[in-house]
Length: 126
Image 1 (cartoon, rainbow, N blue to C red):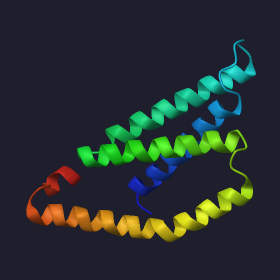
Image 2: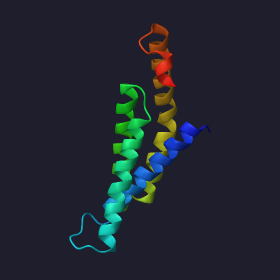
Image 3: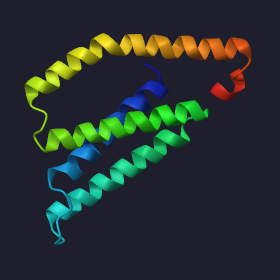
Image 4: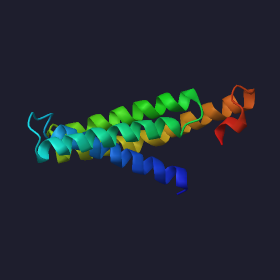
């Protein structure tokens, strides 16, 4: 794993954690441990979203990153609320393991095509 991949994994983990914190007790009114947990969840989620955006060079990458972070955040909330059970989560992961290589391959081929056609400058990818 290179540094970029490790940082992407850390961002995904932090976004899930942020979503979990917010979803665990949704916006309480008094300033207590629960509210601080929610504030931490919001802060983590915002930091991860901004981090995801500023580490991208291409507009296409930015929007893909935003969509990934929103989906990850929603997953954290669903887990915190108990909407996703362990069995459901295992089923989702099984489907993702089967589908994600195809999606990654399609993205790579699309990027290679854009590089070859000159639509994307290789310098922009550094």
